[in-house]
Length: 144
Image 1 (cartoon, one colour):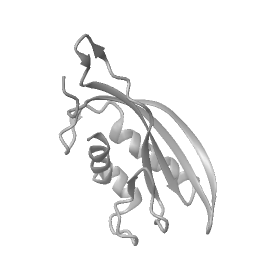
Image 2 (cartoon, one colour):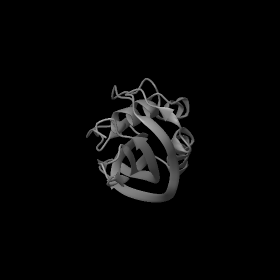
Image 3 (spheres, one colour):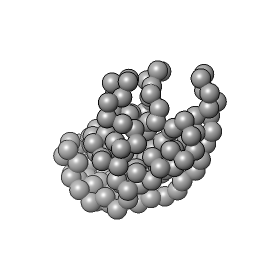
């Protein structure tokens, strides 16, 4: 499924790893679907689907070609690092044409928008930059 493939792609991307680190004290990759662990080491990326699938329907029913919108929230202890992490995510995804490690064929990923956020945290402030993408893919779980 697409989320697993996106997770693997970002967790193994050279530019993302250069920012989140490879030997993290929390023992994670620094990339999380939906929700980060409670005691996560910063910087990190959390991603989730924010707009449902827009299937291309045909007379035979739901088509395997899908378009979904994902938000990638890039968090860091400072604004500059959050922006650098967002740029690394954009470099990994923008214009993506590939088959992900889970077998999902991605036929394009278009950068939609970027927005900053600042969130108070238990131990200070966390800076965030959100980047949204429209991702077109073949949903192999749909029976054509």
